Length: 112
Image 1 (cartoon, rainbow, N blue to C red):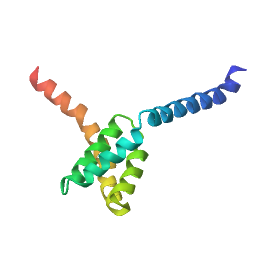
Image 2: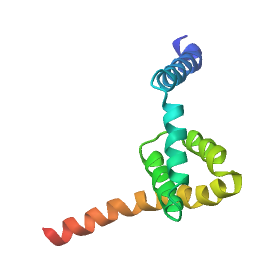
Image 3: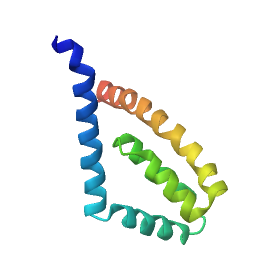
């Protein structure tokens, strides 16, 4: 009987988690801070693309919702510029994450 209601319980737990996350975003004005960050990035010139890729890669590593960064970048930087920088960020983070354990193992092997 308990297994019958498990999907419903999981759904409501996820719904409460999303509502809590949205509440925190609006309480701390994180959406405004993200827009300020992206406007600051837009003023950096040639460094903008590298910084944006690093920020999105860090968001992926920290399991932050990437859609916020993508939509904010599209709003501030423009659709084509944001999409052209979004693709390298989406592929560089998993690549770096997959290389990190191998690098640690190799360094640990040589050090020991």
